[in-house]
Amino acid sequence: MEFDVNSPILFILSGIVIAAVLAQSVFFLVKAWKRGREIGMTPGKLKKIAVTAAIFTIAPAVAIVIGVITLSKDLGVPLPWLRLSVVGSLSYETIAATNAENAMGLTFGSVTNLTASQYVTIATVMTISIMVGIWLVPLVAKKVLGGMISLEKRDKKWAEIFSNSMFIGMIAAFLGFIFSDVSNIFKGSTAGLIPVCIMAISALVMCLAGLAVKKFKYHWISDYALPASLVLGMASAIPITAWLG
Amino acid sequence: MNTKYMDRVHKWGKVWNFSMLGIMLMFPIAAGVIFKALPDSKGLILGLIATAPMYWAVGIIETFTYIPMLGAGGSYLSFVTGNISNLKLPCALNALEQAGANANSEEGEVVSTIAIAVSSIVTTLIIILGVILITPLTPILQSPVLQPAFAQLIPALFGGLGVVFISKNWKISIAPAVLMLVLFIFLPALNAGTVGIMVPVSVLFTLAVSRFMYKKGMLD
Image (tube, rainbow over all chains, first blue to last red):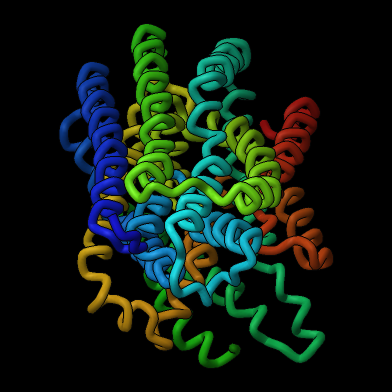
């Protein structure tokens, strides 16, 4: 069979893997839903969790589609479709593809006709390098989460602070990242302020939503507050980038 | 927490994740067999040396960092479907917050699993739609007008999420926020590529500060 990065057989292979991932998600959804009902959670509450998660996911998922488009210029559609649906993220896959292409004397972003051997090489590098979590989680998850449960039994208050500290630690790291280019202002570039302004607008939307819930008792707003702050923050990037970029 | 249910989740997770490992490896192997092509040995070795050690190290640290936050079902799913810090974990955090559930309780386990499963399904379906409509969508999604919006996903996400969690835990937020701001602003090596490595650093620092404050009675 003649090789092409967009060969129908590659779409079928990607489709098989993605169908398996979809099946795993549906399996865990059904099991968790059933368990939720058993422990007394109402169908309404479970449905609300699912709907909120679905709405929240739309904008980031569209950003992932852009990643597929970006990578498809070099690698065709099936491989980026697979890599960004299973485990990967755009930043990781771009680095993995660039390293594999460089190792074969190619330049990422300007590859036109990959051979089958080059394609298999890139796919193998991308697949093997990203796999750690898939096999490591089954080996350690029970022990790690068992530790959390015994911590909860020993000292409930500290266990709660422990969980919140982990969340705060992650948020603080991303907060730092958002400010990472601010110092460029001393070199005359205001572009580093763009993410800071967008974060401020997103935070402001969340504060207003919180205010509406507390003062005016619009409780339904809290279900959509995070998706709304995300989308309005992203939308504000358009004029802010035009202004500061 | 019902340990019988949790034991079953771990059993299902092991079966699914090890199966997914095999299915994922099938793609490059099957492509090689179908097109009668072996990997370029030099490209494979050099490509793996340049990529794998760094991502394996980060992967190991991320696994231990994210499991306690994602819960059992959420971890098995998230480490297969990916996009953890920019989608799955914020989605689970938001769901736990909305449901008023403790992350370490069985209700928390159910809530985060449902949120992450739904998020994975919706993401997969949207990507499928994007692949089907790739020709008409490309000029729209890559238009200079819309590009800045998608380039700024992280600040738009963590602005809203930060308000919720920092306002509720402001005492333990100050020290890690200040440390991360100073590090990211003054160390040029810290950027989009290294933020993943800084998450565990920040988490460990926050845990140490919280433990100190807790022992000193500052969190009562």
